[in-house]
Structures are given as structure tokens and as C-alpha cells.
Image (cartoon, rainbow, N blue to C red; front, side, top):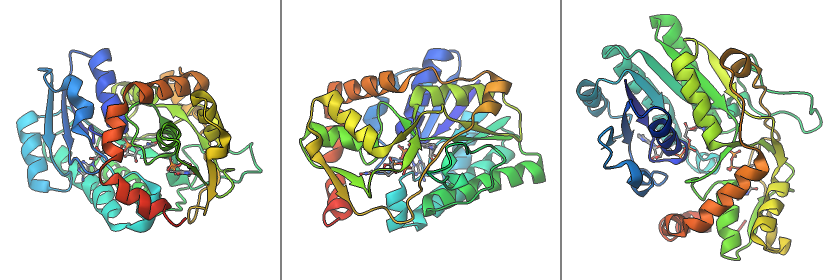
Length: 339
Ligand code: NAD
Ligand code: TYD
């Protein structure tokens, strides 16, 4: 079959492409990506010449181009990773998030309906559930937890999820949605916590921890997320939402200290900076549904995953050094300069 993957030049989309090539070499993959600041064509170098892979530079909001590619490539399945994905940027400038994350999703679904795509999968986030209190470790997000967002990013993702479910109800649109916790691993853009701390450590720069560093995230190795999406598109039930996460809650400060330890850098690099506005306290996924229905379980232990990730950043300096030498510098100065 032919799978159209949007946002495949970004972090999770590219890892999904690599996983698909390995797990299902018989399937043809078509990647479309706008190549925003977060998309990097060099990430896809290893598959560019593969006859079972094709890349198009395209904005998912550009209806005419989207329809044209669907007409040419006739995808059976569409997996939508394309999004503006960074909470801090959404606080600075929400509108582009609404455009890509909501209008882009609607445009893709309209193309799927027009060209009879058999399955549309929306890659969403646990952030649509808002946050959980720090003093209630017994609480987790289930698929029934009400949508209750905090940031412009999570609001735009929640709006897209609601639209997907509305298309399913109204038109019988064959969609599934997954809501995953924080991912980490290779090709993670260095504006996010783990790669930013690794890059700063390697450059002996201060490690900017927001607030007191006590916020909790539920970390999942990216390949485990890719395996879960693969199961959902092949075996998941249409019209269903699946939470993805591996019961791996960590406080930010503990992650940063672990990275210092991995790299043999002093904890004196840690600098506490002004907190993020509206900062979500804790995310924690209950993955019972995907486990019971599809047999999915995370396979990578956090200590192993973090070790592999740190090693990847050590082995691939050129990839992230090129990123942080460009527009990223201006972003970094704006975000952290006077914090
Ligand atoms: P990313 O920012 O690394 O990559 C996003 C990709 O989408 C980039 O390649 C970018 O060029 C592309 N893109 C952006 N706007 C586009 C547009 N208008 N048209 C076409 N392409 C466009 O993001 P990521 O971390 O890989 O996240 C992928 C998806 O997974 C997102 O939908 C995100 O909400 C979701 N998600 C991410 C995490 C996480 O921890 N990173 C967790 C759960 C869910
Ligand atoms: P991030 O990687 O941006 O993911 P999200 O906000 O989507 O969970 O941030 C993860 C956590 O790390 C979040 O609580 C904010 C915190 N953080 C810092 O303390 N310092 C930083 O420089 C960054 C980027 C994040």
C-alpha cells in the first residue's frame, strides 16, 4: 500500500519513515513537508534515493497542491505528523499554530474524502488533556479525560482532534487519533528540553531550567511511539482515540541532572530561569486501552533510551550544529537572553 506521511522531515515523522522502511519494506512512502524551521531535508538523506520513497515540499494548508499530490500518488493511508509543535513558540505567536494544526488538518481530511483514502490517522498529544496536579500521583489521562487545554499549541491540537472526530461522526470518515506523551530520541529539534540540554552541555553553556524544574513529563522513546502508530493504522478501530505512553514520569530537573551525568558535565551549569507562562504541571498517560486492544507496550527503558539518544547527538554533531548556527541563534537570544 501507499502511505502518505506529512511532516516527515521533522522529529517523529522522520523516525516513523525509518521504522516503516524497516518493518514494511513492501509499502510505498510519500512524504510531504513544508520544511519550516523545524523540518530538515538532511534528516531524510538515507531514504531520498529509495525507489519506494518520494518527497514533496508542500504546505498542508495549500489545498490545490494537496489535491494534486493525492491525485498523483493515490495514498491508501495518510498519517498526519505535520504541525507547529513547540509550546514556547505558540506562546509568542499563536496564529501559525491555528493555521497549520487546524486548517492543515481540515485540508488533508477533505483531500482524503475526495480521493477515497481508506484510513486517516491524526498524530495528537496528551497535552490536549491539560495537566494533572503534582500531589495526585494516582491520577492519569485516559481517553475519557475531558479536553482541557493550557497553551495555544495544545488548544490548536485539541481543535484538530475535535474536527477529526466530527468528520468521523458526520461523514463516516475513517479516522483514528493517537495522543502520545513526550517523545525523545534521534533527530529531536534542539529547542526541546532533552536535545537542548544535550547541545548546551556539549558546548559548556548554561542549562536553562524553567521555574524550579519540578514539572513532570511522561517520556517515551520515539521508536516506541512509531510502533504504536503503526499498530493503530493497521489494526486499530476506526473512530477511536488511543493514548500512548509508558508510565515513565520524570521531573525536568532530574532529566537535566541525568544528562549532565551521561556527559560528565558539572551540575553547576544548571541555571533556573523564569517559568513558562501557564506551565503545565504534570502529564501522565494511562495506556491500558492500546495495550489491551493492540498488545502495545513500550520496549525501551528510559536509561537505555537516554543513553542511546546522548550517543546519537555525540555521533551526529554536524546535524544539530548546523541547526543551532542558523536562525536558531536569534530564537535562542529572544527566548533565553533576558530570562
Ligand atoms: P517537529 O516540529 O519536529 O516536526 C514538524 C514537521 O512538520 C516539520 O518537518 C515541519 O517542517 C513540518 N510542517 C510544519 N508545518 C507544516 C505545514 N504547514 N505543511 C507541511 N509540513 C509542515 O514535530 P514533532 O515533534 O516531530 O511532532 C510531530 C507530531 O507529533 C506533531 O503533530 C505533534 O503535535 C505530535 N506530538 C509530538 C510529541 C513530541 O514529544 N515531540 C508528543 C506527542 C505528539
Ligand atoms: P518541551 O520539551 O518544550 O516539551 P513540552 O512543553 O511540550 O512538554 O519541555 C519539556 C519540559 O521541560 C517542560 O516542562 C518545560 C521544560 N523546559 C525547561 O525547563 N527548559 C527549557 O529550556 C525547555 C525547552 C523546556
